[in-house]
Length: 154
Image 1 (cartoon, rainbow, N blue to C red):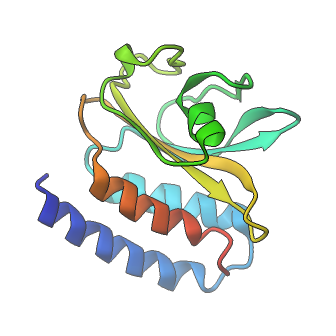
Image 2 (cartoon, rainbow, N blue to C red; image 1 turned 135 degrees about the vertical axis):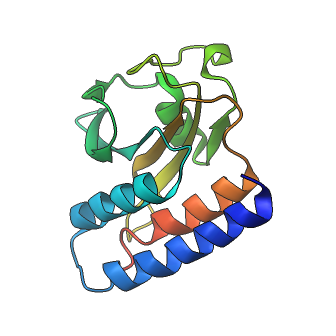
């Protein structure tokens, strides 16, 4: 999808999510709604969901897609890279990312966005996988960062 079309789609998704989430005060419900909307509206999203920090590891939270790894050991994979760097990480080809965790071998590219609570502490990540390489760019990063902020906004 070209960048202007992708930008427009994200803009519509963002407005839809605001309308849906303003009725909720539950971050878990918000994560589930975000995962469902993104999964349903973005054609190249193969797996869309959240991992949450629990007892020193990342545990799967609300998601859409194939079966997920339940636990991600500390400091491993793209999700922990996003947490440790405290910023969005885009991996064009997961086969070239040292330490990539393959929960599903069909995943070929990935974007991870840190999730911050109201105290601005990182409590997890939004993780999106695609079955194609080079699926994510700065447009995805910009919009997914804005969308993740909605989890604790209401």
